[in-house]
Length: 203
Image 1 (cartoon, rainbow, N blue to C red):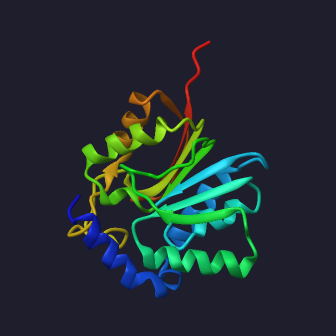
Image 2 (cartoon, rainbow, N blue to C red; image 1 turned 135 degrees about the horizontal axis):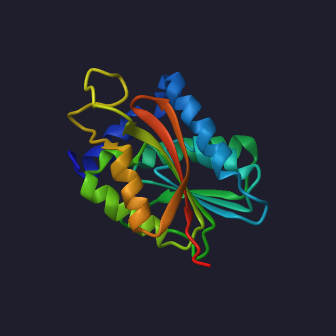
């Protein structure tokens, strides 16, 4: 991680009021794909890690039994809570949590994360994916900045001074090592994609 958690939290606290209005079409497409692949049933509990202002969590709350959004930025969480209240959603709750300490509910069926994991180093990503896969969920949907080809720091989807995206291969290997299999790989841009991983059941 190129910044401390506190530095990242402070940066996103400042961005929170304008965060939604600053998002690219690729970001919006990724949100749509993550929501579509998560596709919770009415009895599913969803953990959305790095929830930000709640774009994924609020969309999934329409269909899930319960959605738990976790983030390190209180400013982002406040925006998410206000949006939930405005929509009258009472099955979604937001609070502090991070990849190493997700503060997850006991029973989780689906884990989602969107545009958050790229702040971690590759080693930290592997640890985070292992932890997420150990929460008991059958499905993990990850939308993020990720490299499908050679990294190009001139592209607009990440800032080298604060972000540390991985290749798709690194992320895929991490899921495989955690006992999951990739069931979908969606490329939104050469540096943006969505991975869907499911628990591998041995017959």
